[in-house]
Image (cartoon, rainbow over all chains, first blue to last red; front, top):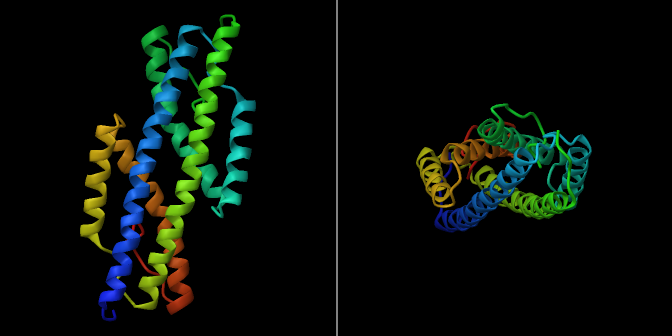
Length: 111
Length: 111
């Protein structure tokens, strides 16, 4: 391992400050996203709407991959990321549906 | 399944529009985060700095959990989310280190 010179350390701290700001933004965007999907879950539970909407999901994935590509982000990672979030939303929707109907829902977690 | 009345459909479309905006923001924040961690990876590879920094990682997790709690986001989910991203950054860092040294690095993917 080489010497950690001061300018290098300074550069590292600068980059970490940016990463910390971005992480705070990500957490708050995620919190807002879950507020939206919670509202979707409640709307669907109250009106007995089908939880899954494969066409909507297909469109979301295609759009996110396109946006990722434009932003030089790996589209496969963007899709994995969406699936990761959907998995969490499904958990939330099931909890909402169980409260309303006593029946767990399936998909359309991505809303 | 009940009838999908127009006002309900309109509410659903409103919520989906917000979700789509948030997803676009998330993708661009993630793209920017990977730009930062890529720079960290290059900095460390060039200066032969140790890839892992457990204290930094500990601080990041604690901070993100705190931010999540304030934003009414499940802190466990926030931590899972950070780990999900770190996993991807590790892949990137290994690729960078291999290019520079011919040796894959380990952690501090979260930078």
